[in-house]
Image 1 (cartoon, rainbow, N blue to C red):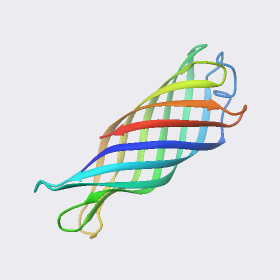
Image 2: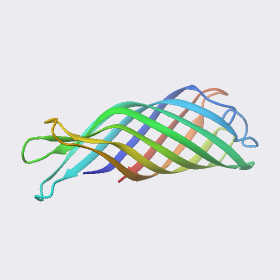
Image 3: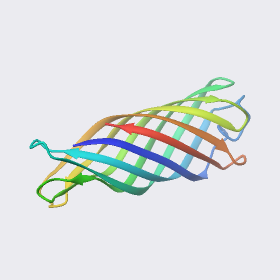
Image 4: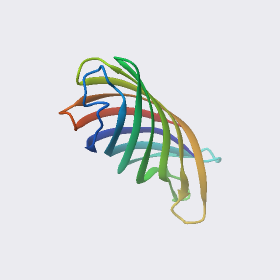
Length: 167
């Protein structure tokens, strides 16, 4: 089963660090956020059948950034999605999904202005793939790539939009 596409929209944060609260001269610090995720996934079986599914979920994201220059930082982070990400339905009628998905991320960030950043993301993704018949379940691992933008609303709040491709 392959998770092909996850689009993540971060709706806001409960806490943000000085990393993104300060001008681009200091990008270092911790950020914590709650996320709203909108995902589309697909599943294919050995018999050649395949299908897609769409899901929305709530997640959490944390990261710490180290400034390597006044406008560039490297971050290490993690995210967790509590959602049951639907990937489609097999010919047998059983639905396929990925549950309890989490990732470990490397996040390079470029400050384009005092309150606007562009970031990339390379992720190692983990989760549990299951069918809704309760018979089949397996731990899965994949790789993810992403791009996004982040804008500070004030010194403690930001919004960001990201696009991740996970396999």
